[in-house]
Length: 618
Image (cartoon, rainbow, N blue to C red):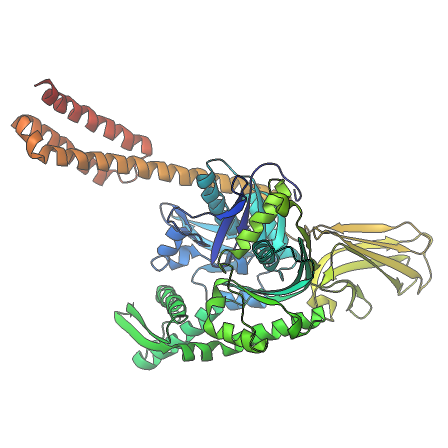
């Protein structure tokens, strides 16, 4: 349930390509960004399935080139969308894994796991990544964590936000709040830069990540953060820059070798990994080489790429970012000179051309790089989590965040035209009323509630509907009052009443047209089952490793000069024979259970201990 929670709470930046988790440490009065088991502060948003196990994070991404069709990424680009969504169809062309239409036109990811075909919704894949982030926090803190604040792009619609919340629930989290990524970054900036200023400081958060782009214009006055306007694109980020390079090198390979690799998932996965590496290198160098051994049919691929070429391939995308910045300023009714700071968030803001274009756009104003672009969102989410769970210091508790609704809300009117009741970028909470008129004398008026910016209702997203009736029927063009109430949690209540009659209403609390209760319960059961399987696989691997480690130790022991001199030839032979038998058993029992490995270790220890005990007696 959204709201306040008790005890420790974490902030999770659930990213398209990488995720990050932070926690407020009350004893130190600061946020700690938590490292994963590899020592990294961000974790790949990857989930992979093999014939033996499920992998999440670093391990999943590391094997993606060898197992592309069962290595799932970009779940954030699927979550809350329909299968026939144009962006989904475009992405399917690029993904090595299979996506099909499921019930209610929901996209379902197809993989092979332990020899069986499995289907997963984007919420399930995201829940696995969230579980990984929760486990990272649990390992660091030494206790289980239930409460969390999860971030989403500012331009995520109602369905995408609720689907993310569902993913948190499936991961066993009590989601205190879903907050916008640039708002979280603004919190991080506000707390880091707090100097007690009483005047309003206008800050533009430019958040260009792996898969999404957001801009928010925030006015910070002391401990109050007021979002003035937001804009963005839920399908624009570093992966799109990678895709431009992949397409470029696919064409180059075809030109050089007369072979088309676009239909080979392994080749494309390896090329994409190399392109991602090249993109990062070009942020610090003006030229680099891309090399992929045996890319396709034994052919090695090698090429040189310059920063200028990379910029040329992506210039239209960079300019689109600036157009959205301009839109945000217009919505906020602010001039460029009114902006005090431009804050860079997201790994893709490291691209030099993006920084230069931004500085030129703001007439030479230097962009702010004082906060870590990879960690700022998780940092801000952790602060909000501390505030909602009541464990922050006075500065955190005094924090006031006034957000806006990113998309317009309205109803369908005659001719299929959407009439906007609450325009986008309206400060929340808010309440608006509009008067409409009945189109006939049937005594019933259908109220269809939509979200979006298109003129035609059908081009926007239907949130819900209800009917207002009258008995006896009212005449045509009878007044109908419609009231929209949006609270600070984004919960929309729509009510309508014919003049002098009882009011009808519907509450749209981000729950329409998403996962049904029984679907979530099934996903929860599956999540628990997969977790048990993962734990058993881990236990089995540990038991096998323990057996092999002990055998290795005993081999070294019997070959030690001092020990060997104290062993009889028969005893030495006995230990060597026991180890050989164990090796043979391992070869023939690869699929053995953890208890069997433990039993074999105990047997080997029994034999070896009986012999080594003789040395101690001598």
